[in-house]
Amino acid sequence: MDPVHEPCPRCGDQPAVTNGPTYWTAYCEKSHFPGRVSATPMRTRSAALQAWDDGVKSNLIR
Image (cartoon, rainbow, N blue to C red; front, side, top):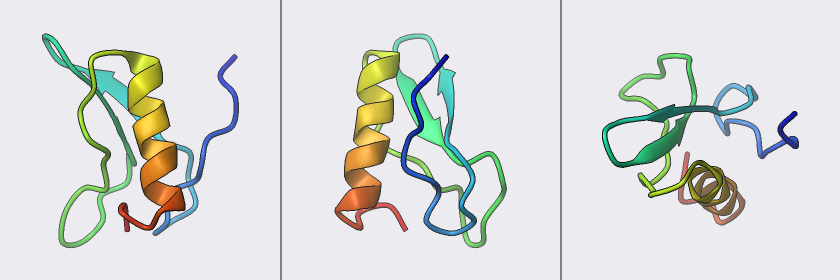
């Protein structure tokens, strides 16, 4: 079970994680205007969630 991560700054939901061919991205599943709330794509799942937490804590993800 995943630990609790920082909630989405717009709606308070926990982040979801998706992976492409080479990168993982943490994002909010709800659609927010004007665009999706997401963190920087990273090479590993844990790094993507860490980027999400760091971004929310430092107000880089809004």
